[in-house]
Length: 515
Image 1 (cartoon, one colour):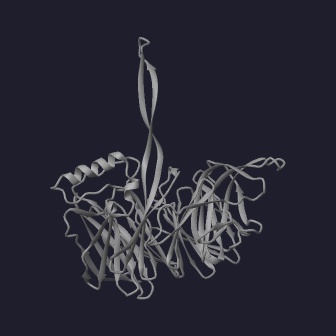
Image 2: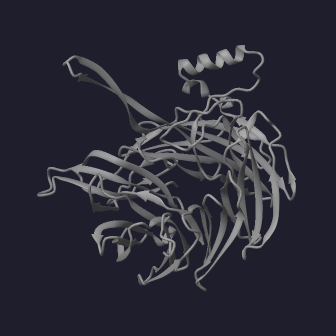
Image 3: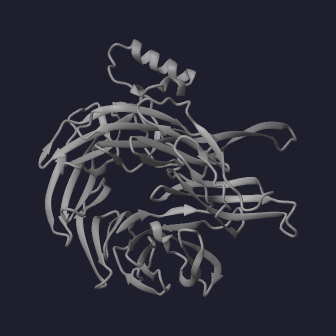
C-alpha cells in the first residue's frame, strides 16, 4: 500500500524531462486546467501512482450553518477526468492524509476542536473504478492534535497529542474497529516520527522528551500491528554541548535502524520568531541502532559543508571570525530554520535533505499628527512571508560516514506557507533536485562531483500556443510515480487570440518525466 501525507496544490500540467537536458514534449501538451481565483481555497491531491490522482477541495456551498460540500475528482494518469463526487462534511474537518490499497483510496479527515459528543475523525473510502464511497466515523481523544499518520493495507496508524497524554491509535477499515493506546502522559513530550516495518510486521515510534532547556532525550518504541509494545530503547546524548531537536526513523537494508535529524548548540540562545515554531539548527546528526546497541552519535555541522562560505554575509563571516579568535569556544555554528525531508535510501547510501528559510520583514514609515497638528514620523514592521534560501544535501553510508555534501540554491520563493518546495529523485548514482519557480522548473543533477553552478531552467508548457503567464501566485512540484513528477500551481494567463477568454486564472497540472 502506498502512503503519503497530503500535498496542497492549485494546478497541474505535463512536461518531459531528461537528466542532463530538461525538455518539453514535442507532442501536444497534456495539461489539466480548472477555472479558479488567485485567493481560492487550496486544492489537495491524493497521489495514486499509476492509477492517477484525486483532487479535493472545499466548495462555497453550505448545506447548513456548519456543513459544506467538498468536491472530489478522480483523474487517470493522463489527467483525464473519470468521475466527480460532491459530499457534505462539517466545515471544521481538515484533510490530513491518505492511503491506497488495490482499487480503494482511503482519505483521512480530522478536526481538533470538537464538542465532546462529536465524532472528530472521518475516513472516506473511494472505489476508484466506480466512484462508490463509504464513510467511517470515529470518536478519538478530545481536543487533541494529530501528529503522525501512516497507512498499511486496511489499517491506519496515527498518533494524537493533547496536554495530558500521547496516544497511538489503530483503525481497521475492514472491521470498522478502533483502538487507542496511551503511550505517555508526562509533560514536555511529543512524537517525532512513526514508521511501519512491513517485513517484520512492526510499528516503530520515536518520542522526544525535554529533560531541560539544554537537553532532549529520544525514546524508540516498537509495537506489533495489534499495538502490543515489544521493546523500548532510551537514546541519551552524552555530548552536553549539543541538543537533539528532531528525529526520523530509517529502516536500513542490513536490518538495523538509523535515527537522523537536526541539532543545535546547547549554549546558544535560539531566535524566537513569532511566525514559526521551528527551532534553529546548527547541523545534522546520525545514530545507528543494532538491536539494543546504540552506536555513538555522529554530528555534521553546517559550517563543514562545501562552498558554505558563498552563502554567508559579512555579518556572519565576522561572527565566525570572532568565535574562531575566542580560543575557549571549540564548537560553533550558524543556525538555520529547516524543513527536513524524509531520508532517501539510494543504493547503500542515505540522503538527508533540509531546506533553509527565514521570516522576511519590511518596515513601513508613516507620518502622523498629534493634537496640535505637529507631524510625527512613525514606523511599523510587516511580516512579508518565509524566504527560502538553499537546501543542504548530505550523503552518508549506513554507518553514518559522510560520503559527500552539496548545497542547492533556492531562488525567489517567498511564501506564507511553510512546506517542502524542493522535490528530490534518485537517478541511479545521481540525485535530481527540482522546484517550481514562478512558472519555470529549476533543476540540478547532483552527485559527489558536481558544483552549485550546474543549475538549469525550463519554462512550463501551456495549454494554447499564445498563452502567456502573467502571474504565478503558487508554484509546486511533487514526485508522482516511476520517473514522473506533477508540476502544479495557480496561474493567471493572458491570451489575446482567445475570444471571450483573453485572461483567465486557473489551477493547472502538468506531468514531468526524468528518463
